Each structure stands twice: as C-alpha cells, then as structure tokens.
Image: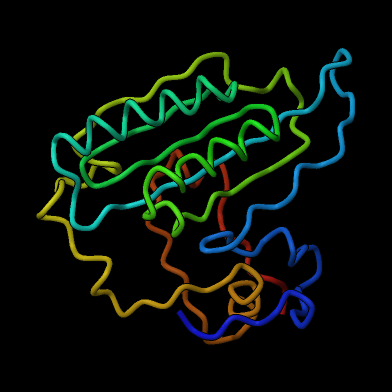
Length: 199
C-alpha cells in the first residue's frame, strides 16, 4: 500500500465525501451517529458489508470456530443478515443498530487480528424496515464461486496490486487513459456499475 494522505489533504471529486469513502482497514471505525427517529419512530440502522480472505486458509477447526464466533457476535449485538464462511475467509452483508454493528466489527478484530485488515463498509441512517430479518451464515467451500477453493486460489499476499482509496480511484477514472475491467456478474452489474466522470 502506498503512502496514505491525511483526510484533511484529500480533495474529493464532486459528490464524493472523502471522510466516508476512506478504508477503515487498520483504522478506527467511524463514530456512532447521533440517535434519531426514522420509520414509525424506530431508530435508523446501519448496513455493514465486508469480506476478508484468510491466507493461509483456515484449518477445519479454525473454520468451525470462525462460524461460531460470527454467529455469537451477531446474536450478542442484535446484528442480522447473510454471510458466507469458507476456509479461505468470510464475506457478509449485515444490518443492525449502529452501536451493535460497530461492536460486532470490533469483536471480529479482537477474535482474530486478520480482521484488522478488513475494510468494513458501514452505511448509517438506513430505515429500520430495510434491515435483514434473520441471520444466516453459510458454511461454503469458496467465498466467491470460481472453482479455486482454498490452496488452489491465487495468493493475495504475493500480489503486486496496490490498494487505491475511493477518492483516488475516482481521480483515476477521470484520466483519459484509464481502463476499468469490471469482472462482476450480470446480476451485480445491474445493481450498480462504474460511471466514469464526464470529460
């Protein structure tokens, strides 16, 4: 990872809030927002999206322990949603009370230092009616089905790719020689896709 600019020195493209788009990997989570009332007087909830690959892959015992820990932390903090847990890591989409979601994330960090590397994507202010109704953590062979589970998957630690913060990514999209290769499937692309800025 290259040098990290301070948030104060970042100049974000129009429409991008730099403080909200910066990775939280190896950084504190954003503070809990002030309490407010939303849909039918219920306080808004927080959406949390994340994935974390484990390298080397977890043993069978570590895999079972990870699933139990995720379920325990979610139940303890009122967090619901969906997740996939493979020997190669964890991928979740969750909702819950703002403080509960943050406690869940901090619980994962305390459970295994690997999760300090995780870029938990938190979105506060979601209407409570849009939250998940149950918790489902599936034990799977792969986080993403590409037929290379566990030891057969390419090494991320040996990758020469450089992490780019969202603000810098938007700047790169504005450059005339930038090419974006989007490898998401049709369903994911229909939900959202990259829209380069007008030149």
